[in-house]
Length: 154
Image (cartoon, rainbow, N blue to C red; front, side):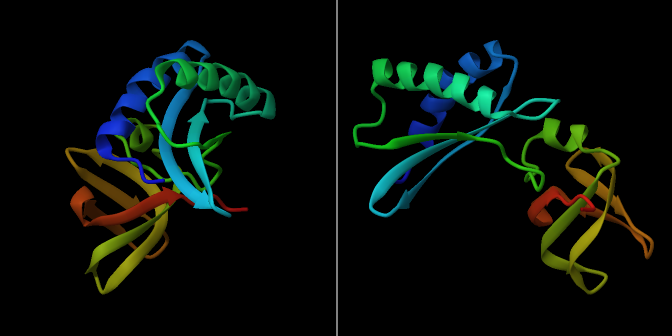
């Protein structure tokens, strides 16, 4: 099952407010196929982290809502989860919330001969981020990011 941008947007518009009413945020909606099953994945988060009880409560609400709205015509299984500790940064609020945290950035084009940087996210401003580590400080335009994610010391 592949979600078109149109279907993803409709799902976000319907599911997002329900999740926000529960004191959480909708991080991402995606789909995958596993053992010939269609899986609709809804990742949620909140400042204090997501619990199993949070997932269960959101699952119940979202499942009922999706049954009523009937946006997805195929049979699917709903999976509610957390983006995890290696959460990918995608939205402006992700970057702002992650200031002064350790991240891993994978670049489309090298900067200073490197296509990967691990460091502290020092700044986010006007489509530009600044990362700093023991070796250097580097500024990266968002369009040069292939992927950026939290990368905590474990």
